[in-house]
Length: 400
Image 1 (cartoon, rainbow, N blue to C red):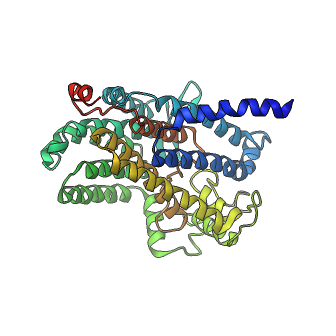
Image 2 (tube, one colour; image 1 turned 90 degrees about the horizontal axis):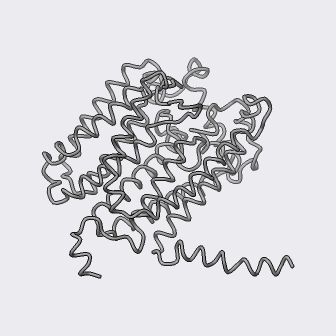
């Protein structure tokens, strides 16, 4: 009876999968598959890396952090699939309203609802739920910038078009994040904005000018924070014995974790660094735990997954004729892949510690939800039946 029931249910599952992805391009399917893989692999590593800290901070409950992450996954994936069915034209119309709402939500960090953690005021607590509004702001900014530039795609080479159309909105978004002292998130958002403008066709000279101005501003802000100066100087000069218990503790033990893993790792669940030696093991430094427990094979698997995801999304960008869809896809690609590279570079000591999580894998409900929502938007604008949102309605009807 059990075999019969399994056979009877198999065709239904097949039909459901075919309805979801049967008509989509290979790049579309690869993108979604890589996202699912990274989320599932991330859950495994969250369970492994967090059970020690969970037991210490949740009355002995080893699985508290893992269960919270599972709940966010169970909420985020259905939301991603629901958003993937939205008409692209509706997403474009909603973009300005969503961006304004995200700016207002980010402003709440400066009210009594705001929470300061690790020197950054970038969290809010609403009715007992905590999250980072800046993660939602990333998605909203991508959609808003894509909607604005899609209608001005022929005038992007004129810097006045960029300044008048995008300048104030992007400046407000970055300023709200910087005011909360979260330079890592501000850097990622700057990367997103530059990537979208580049894909829209802006002149390289204009982009280099913006990069120079932003770089000078970031350097000035970094000098205002003694802790950031310490981290940057340590990164430049290397760790000394005096720095070991301070700014070097996290990065030194991250290096120890990666080095002790070797090629094959010490075994899943057998990390020693997570026993209070490596702070933020399940968040910003989860890649180090992957390296310790699964070795070079595990870290290579993560890197290859992000490379495959990048290639699939880049091919979607190249093959997408609609400007809005192309810029949304490119913006999300720059965000997810760029943030992954920054996170991995920090763990490998290529960059100073910035506090940027690894997409789809690090613990964090708002970060995971926002990433899955962004993928849902990319799925929506790249579906085989998605209608171009930039073409005149009459032309769409005649093409049909």
